[in-house]
Image 1 (cartoon, helix red, strand yellow):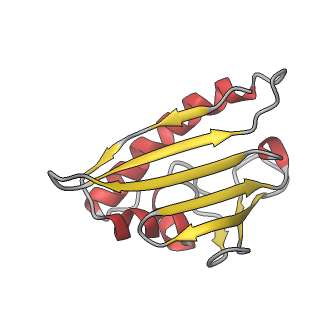
Image 2: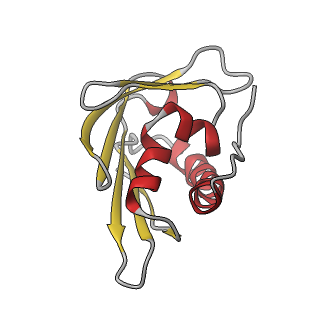
Length: 140
C-alpha cells in the first residue's frame, strides 16, 4: 500500500505544534475554519470543507501531548487510513514534524492527490505555528 510521508522543519516548540494539530482552535489556524476536535484517545475530529457534503471524521487512537498524535479516518476518502504526527525536538531548536498518512488501498490513486494536498497544508501549518497568525487553507 502506498503511504504519504513528509517531514517539515518548524521553528516552534513541540507544544505549539501539538496544539495546532490536536485542537479545534489550532486546526482553524492552518487547515479549515470549520472543524471540531475531541480531546485525547477516543476523541472525534470533524473537518468540513467547502463543497463537500459532510464533514470528514477521524478518531484519535493515540495522543501524547507534545510528542505524538494518531488519527484514524472514519469516512470519506480517508476511510480506513491513518494519520500519524510525530513531533521531534531538534537540538538546534524548533521541531521536525514527521507525518505519515497510510492505509490507502493499493488500487486507489487518491494518495497522489493527497500528497500534493498535505504539502500545501503543511506550508500553512508551518506559518501558523511559527507566527501565531491564522491563515487557514479552507474557510467557510
